[in-house]
Length: 165
Image 1 (spheres, rainbow, N blue to C red):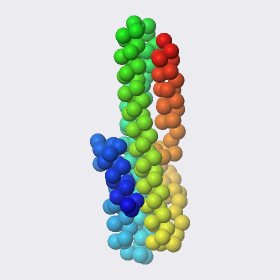
Image 2 (cartoon, one colour):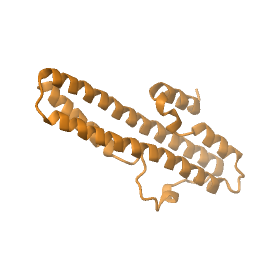
Image 3 (tube, rainbow, N blue to C red):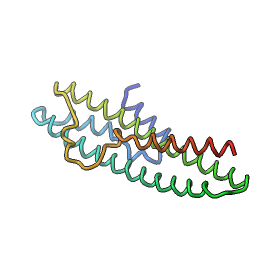
Image 4 (tube, rainbow, N blue to C red):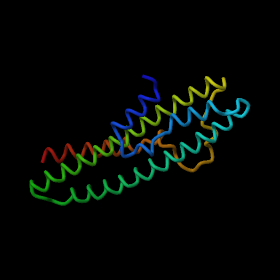
């Protein structure tokens, strides 16, 4: 099975609700093949920049929602509750952890697609590709961000504490 098909299958199985937010690998590949060879490098840079900005906006927006939700959960857990409440909080935190893992999968799959389309670009143009065309953008790209790992680690620690109660 080719990469593009595996990519679409993974997305449809793992995160069907975010399918429209993931990289349009097939479209990027098609556009790369249709571009005038003389303008392929510059044109592809613009297409990829637009795609990365779209994915990054989704990632940052979702991550911010999760940070706020996590703070609410931590505030609730900080208060003393009965064992029934602890069980409910553990369940809520596990569901939240699953959402974080889903966002991590989003990150990994799209990073994979990004690397693969860059490889296709290099094959077509014979030119190396770097992210210098993204310089000047004031936000960190989703696949470079490490805040998700920190959130997952903190969530795991709290879950372990709740289980020990």
